[in-house]
Image (cartoon, rainbow, N blue to C red; front, side):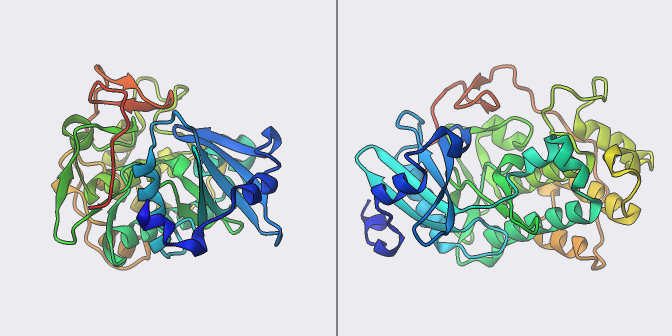
Amino acid sequence: LEGINSAESLQFNFKEIRIATENFSIDNKLGEGGFGAVYKGKLKNVQEIAVKRLSTNSGQGIKEFKTEVLLVAKLQHRNLVRLLGFCLRAREKLLVYELLPNSSLDKVLLDPNKQQSVDWETRYKIIAGIARGLLYLHEDSRLKIIHRDLKSSNILLDQTMEPKISDFGLARLVGADQIQADTNRIVGTYGYMAPEYAMTGRFSVKSDVYSFGVIVLEIVSGHKCNSTAFPFDEESLPQRAWRLWNTDKALQLVDSRLGGNFSSVEVTRCVHIALLCIQEDGNKRPTMAPIVSALSGHPVELAVPTPPQLVTTTNSTSAQTSSTCTFSGTNEITELQPR
C-alpha cells in the first residue's frame, strides 16, 4: 500500500468515520452493493459524506481498493464523483466520498414518485453529463481509463440533478496508445456488458460506450434494461428501441409518465445514438467525442445502426449480487491493478 499511505492528506481516522456514521448505524445505511455497504455520515465540520465500507469477504481486496483510491484521487471532473479520502484499519477498508442527495439514477428511474418529477429536460441533461464524464475518462484526462462497470446504479445525482459517474473498483488504466485489453475473469452486470467483453474478456473504451447506450435507453424509456416487469411482451429494451426507431416510431419509446412533454428532436437523437452505441461490432460504435458533440446540438453525421444482438447468459453464474453475472463460469472478482 505504499502508493496510498504516502497520500496522508487523503487519510481519515477510523474513529472519525465511525462517529460520523454513528457507528455505521442501520439508519444511516444508504444501500449495499457487491463489494459492501454505503453509509451516510457527517464530519465535525458538518460536511456530509458517503462512506463505502468494503465487506471483508466481498472479493474486492487490496488491489481493487488501491485501484479505486489511486484512480479517483487523480480524476477531477464535474461528472465524476469526488473522492474525499480513505481509511485503512486492520481488516477495515473505507472510501469516503462527497454525499450526493438525489441518490442513484436507477432509484430515480424505478421510483414512481421521483420519476414523475424528472422531466425530459433533466433527463437530457443527465445523458449529456454522463457522456462528458466518459469522454473525460477515455480521452481528456491525463490517464486513459475504462470504467468496465458503467450502469444506472453507478450514476449518482447531485442537488441539481447533475450526474456523476461512481464506483471505479473495476476500472482499468490502459496505455494511451492501447486500443484494447483482455481479462480472464469477467465481472459485470448483465444487460450493460458489451458482447465482446461478456464472451471473450476483451474490453476497450467501446465497452463503456456500449454500457452508455443501454443507460440512454433506460433514461428515455423509464425502464431498466434487465427489468423483469417489462410491458413489452418478449422484447428486450434494445430490441424494442430498434424496432420503433427502424419504423420511424422512436417517440413511442418515451416514458409515458412524461405525458408527451419532451423534445421529439432530442429523443430521436438519443435513441439513434444509443442504438449506435450498442452495435454488436465494437468497431461500429462511436467514440464519446462525436456523441458529446451530437448531444450538444452540433452537426454530426451519425451512421445508420444495425439491429442489436442479445448476449446469452446460459452458462453464467451469480457473482457478488443477484444482479451481477460472471460469464466465465467463476465466482471470482477480477483482480485489477493499474498498468
